[in-house]
Amino acid sequence: EFRGLGLAKRLIQSALQGSWQGTPDRVLLEVAQTNESARALYESCGFLIINRRKNYYMDSDALIMERKERSHET
Image 1 (spheres, rainbow, N blue to C red):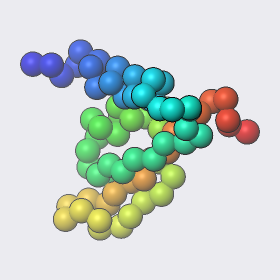
Image 2 (cartoon, rainbow, N blue to C red):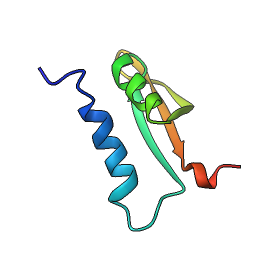
Image 3 (tube, one colour):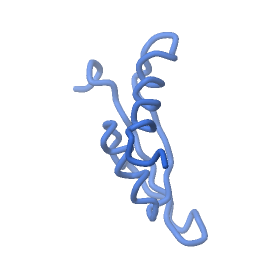
Image 4 (cartoon, rainbow, N blue to C red):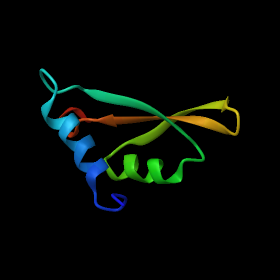
């Protein structure tokens, strides 16, 4: 019943903005290629696919995603 309310996106944004001691230059995460809703969420938060682990999961590759802080991008 909580899907589609934007809660996950707000949690991710909050974690990226407020819970660090200093701002990280980049954040990495891993997601199953088949998890389209999670991938869309992460992409909407500024994460980009940078690598792939073939056959990491039984039914899917793992995608490595990265988000660089805008102030540190070149």
